[in-house]
Length: 143
Image (cartoon, rainbow, N blue to C red; front, side, top):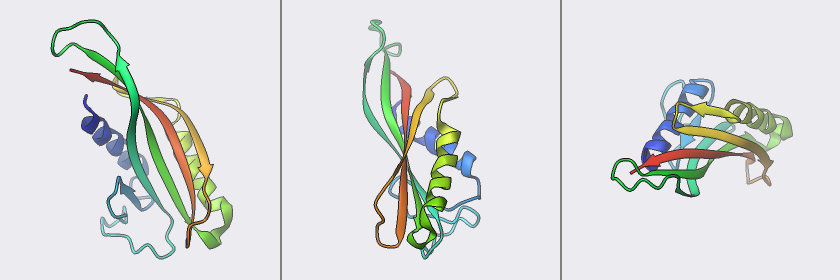
């Protein structure tokens, strides 16, 4: 599984998790209302941004034949939780805890392992009180 296939699978897992419960954005896309599929009027509606970044890795076996070379890659699933700044800390923290609890210490098929997750409150940014959830991830790439 290459990087783009990994990103697609992680995003699909997010969409399965969130369903139509909350607006979200994948990568650098505009946020959408999950219930309608329409672009979110960001106003004061809490929402999530989900992205995935590769952070390193290396060869996991010594087999040299094409199609059997296995690489173990590490990455981070980043889930930004945006709650209105006037909602206090509770809303953003609750969003972050739900996302952290879903992803931490689980396996997605045989290809992706979600490891440790941490929620990090961020400084308020204009109208948002963001919390960042970072989920350590391991995935296998075969070339």
